[in-house]
Image 1 (cartoon, rainbow, N blue to C red):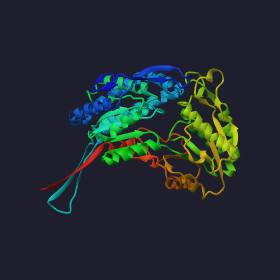
Image 2: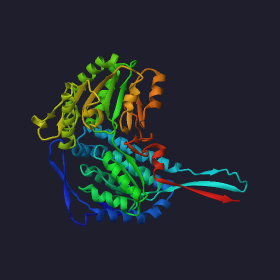
Image 3: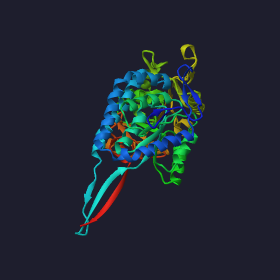
Image 4: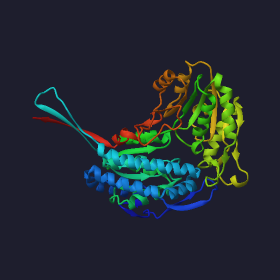
Length: 475
């Protein structure tokens, strides 16, 4: 663990094992921290906060740009660790490292743009002054599916705002977090400003985060169930919280869209990270006129996808994170087929030859999916594309919005008016219009409804770590 500028072992001296999901082999022992270690890390962050929050924006920006430079110099090493630990293909891992580094550079600049304002008053002898200041100590919990970019997406704006932070990474991917904190140390970020607590059991760490009075804000990316629990606990202590939770993204192919072009985009975004992305499309709503051509193109491309270790040339489908993920995907596919869905390709766990010891599931396309099937409602988090036919253009917006989630949605259309109608009518925080990558460090990221609270990225991303203070001046 990394606490108060030093690498340390937990008070219990306990460790836990980390495994490669592609072959099931143990790759490391990692410190197994408890709430005691989390408390020490929070204390360190609390002690560092007064001086760090008073540092200038230019000073904080320098630390972030140094971390960005070091991170890019280690791009290949970071990507290889990610592929070993998380399983995604090496090319995708390199892309994530670049995306993660973007947040460091973006918020290095954004730190200099935390602007206040002077407001007029109805009284001639009064002025209002507005100031934004760091909220305080931040506790962060990051997921395993994007184990590096989710770290910088939280730490970069927190540090830019003047906050200190304690991070608990996912228990499946602590090695990526450890490598990132080596970079923060080499960038000479002051002691106590960034702290890392690794643990196999997240519950006691989460409870310390939500109850410790020094923690002013919690930021979490993960499941909706855990996010709701943390929100309840944080609310009891009036802590600020931001949550990036699950999704159930619709992918709408309109009547006027080019079905072949849409299917090519669908094949890329659906199977990115083996479908283990919160913005991954989970329902493909395809107009009757485009249905057959869309399925033909998508199934042809999916059938050619190579599954295997992320280090193998040509692999685009890596392992799922564990056997529980395989079981969930298989349950949804089995349920859909039993209720009348047509299995076009895939539909099984892969256990032969070089895939025997990993958690691999064949990339799958299901046609004729209906609302009574589990996959129509549940987030899949796996390589399955369920396709639903629709006839009425007026109904598809209601079909897309018919979910408790509201993170991402995708629309393919060649009609500008229809694009704007969909953009304004879809109850989702992120909309890709003929675009399968509607994300950037410069753009707000987050959802509505059960998909979370607050935004990461862009200007809103730094505001999540700032309090607004108003002064009335009588002159």
